[in-house]
Length: 470
Ligand SMILES: [Zn+2]
Image: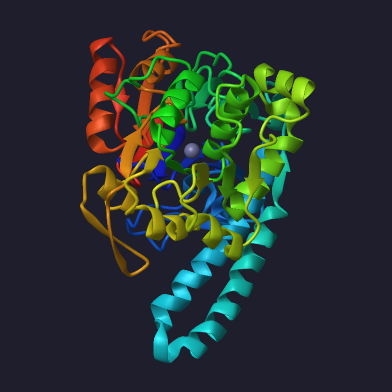
């Protein structure tokens, strides 16, 4: 008998992380339980019996790692969900929000708009109630552990969370399992972040392992920008606002990116590098809530961020900043052509308050859309970045006259070099196997090639493929 490893999600694709370890005594651990995002089809079945899982470990709060946990609990999972404190707090926000969005989508798929609307509204309320109950039920199983501390979970399993700087509270997972008369060490990278990310402490060193399950999102890709984030943002703001006064619109994910961008803006304002009269708006209800979580988790922020709290009382708020409270304010700001900086969600323009602004400002040649995150194939953001002259926003065709720009400085993922550094921490003589997950096939191949060239054994698991590890 041996330990078995199986990837049930993020196998040769980026989203839907779900990895399973089964010990020879039958004890079964699931690391992450994420949704498949970006319009790709979701397998309605897990591929395993939810009742057969004994323990869930969650690396971070992003929905592609946590989004199917409510379903897992509804289908019979009864154990704990171990994570860090910020992951618990952010998951509570995101899972509740996701329940609401899913219900909306399902009700509109079933009943459409127009005629069946009333029926649709009733169906929405019922679904929303059920999905929200599922989320609440699942959140009661969350249990927060500290980082860099070894926990004995059961007689033959020890666990340590190691911060990886991808998102507030995000960790890589280190496991020691005594099985079949020996100790085997496992590493799960989770999503690997970067050194020097605004607001977050750097990734901590990861121990040697026998088996590594490593993400590969940026395999073969190097981050291009080497200047400090503040310099990049300052240059872009100056270009966007220009001589005649333009408007800068920043689509950003509400959790993580928005806070990083606000921290940099705050620094620029404090240094007097931005025009005092230009207001900054954050228009995203989720960003307001998640910024509050960041604010309450001072211990989890970088030293630089904590120094800002000492000096200015806050990292993410400053005098020129306004959090937009309602749709009425949102529409008013969208229709105002005076110079301003606006941060709104969603980052890929797939929905959210940003649509109100796009409908008005995409046709404004003095506006500039600054993309600071990943733009998935098929998203509205990608259409714009690819140079579309017209796009459809909420059913309305809008001409694109605004300027578009992009920076990778706020990307929350390590690039090829960062992934290589992480994966090769254990020498090839000790590391028995690297499993690459969480990447498009081309990106995985690029990373696999480089690792194999250095003598490492690399597998790219298929969904459901069982590996016997001895
Ligand atoms: Zn993530």
